[in-house]
Image: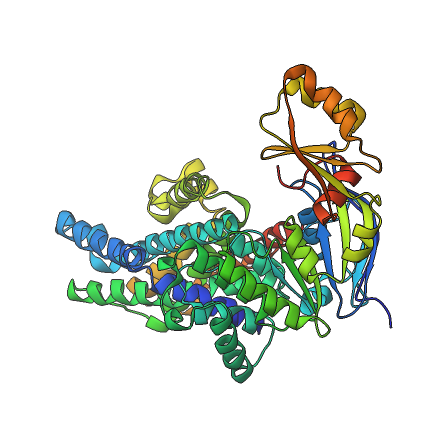
Amino acid sequence: MSPAIQIAGLSRSFGDVVAVDGIDLSVEPGELFSLLGPNGAGKTTTIKMLCCLLRPTSGTATIMGHDIREDPLAVKRMIAVSPQETAIAEFLNARENLSLMAGLHGIDKVRTRERSDELLEIVGLTDRADERVKKYSGGMKRRLSIAMALVSEPQVLFLDEPTIGLDPQSRRGMWEHIAGLKGDTTIVLTTHYLEEADALADRIAVIDEGTVIALGTPGELKAGLSEAAVTVVEVEHMTDEALACLREIYPVLRTIEGGVEIEADDVSVYAIGDCLRPFGIEIQSAYKRKATLDDVFLELTGKELRE
Amino acid sequence: MRYAELAKRNFKEVWRDPLSLALTIGLPVLMLVVLQALGGADEFFEATSLAPGIALFGFVMLMFSAAMTISRDRESALFSRLLTTPLRSSDFVAGYSVPYLPVAGIQAAVIFGIGVLFGLEVAGSILLVMLVLLLVAILFIALGMIIGALFTFKQVPFAYMVILLLAIFGGAWVDIEAIGGVFKTVGDLFPFAHALAAARDVMLDGAGLGDIAGDLYWVLGYTVVIVGLAVLAFRHRMLE
């Protein structure tokens, strides 16, 4: 089977700033593929090029065989997008907003009605479906905005940070729904929530500074980490000087509430103690835990995902 | 017919904003009534001479609301969302323009209806007058499309002022025939004086289609060009 999305050397610059720098990726039909990276990594710029909103500086991509440069209209017939920002028509009610998107994609009235009922239920807006969305709370608008991407039952669905601004309960509900689409719909999901990528994605591309720095299933990415996983060292209080000393021995390190986490194959509690003692800091506990995608990201980029 | 879905949404957007709708229809009517009262017996201030110019003024207001709607949409994420749907730039122009046509029709009907109360008479064919006005309405709405597609929400009022001044000094409300000279030469290059002349000729002198063809071509030519430019303006917005 030919891939649903084939990206080749895709790049985009804004003046001197290279936002996306030669990305090559291939997404299989029905796959849920996640672009994971910090803000400004180039995820949204990539999505915008794939949706024919931004012209690539070089390289190209095909969506279901249609080239984004050559035939944007054919691409747009295949896709739906949930943008990062809430994108709704304020003077319409929820049902009308859904009908608008369905109509623009040529879905017939009966199917639109069925899909709208189903989606309104999922996003918890059934009771207020006929009310103008102007009066909705921020969370309600956000939920409607995501539902608008789902109503046209696209072959390829782009979800740009879909659960940003959702309460935990709605987020769970949205995850369930997205997971249910897997297999039928090809989904590209950008996120900086690791739990989200971990829970939903078949494969993840870790993106930093416009390039793909790692690619694999969540399991593969975590398995690629050093055996020793992560050492958590808890102390009462940490000073900058002690931290600087630790960083010299263990460059991949992050501060957490009440201590530090160190990623290294061979961590010596004695060496840590030697760093802390001169500053009167005592180790309260030290233990190892399993690696998470957070750790993968830190090891790959030297940065934390959430700043 | 995808544009129809967009038009439906914009139609609701227009009709669910009663304040701006009231202004668009109410202001020209107010203008007609006030000018009528001020003018007394002067021929220029008779309803029959005033009505076409005031209808034109109403269309300029439509241009303004259309431009505002588009520039406001462009600043919201909804517009980028619309750009990811299979709409062509001509669909965008049609989808944003068509909802304003019934408003233009109502404006003209109300202005002429009230004009009749003040003694407005149409010597020629009222259908012909409406045809002229329809062309002008499309022209101004398309100008609104261009302004809305190219300028930001804050810049729209300035662009509006420029068009308004062009319309005024292009002969929409200034009698360039009477002033003559450079004024007339320049004014004749714009479509506004031609539109008004055509409408007045039909209303006052009972001119037929053949009599006003020359003026009508000017208006038609401008309308076609401006609609074409509006499509290009949207195409320019579609891919950055």
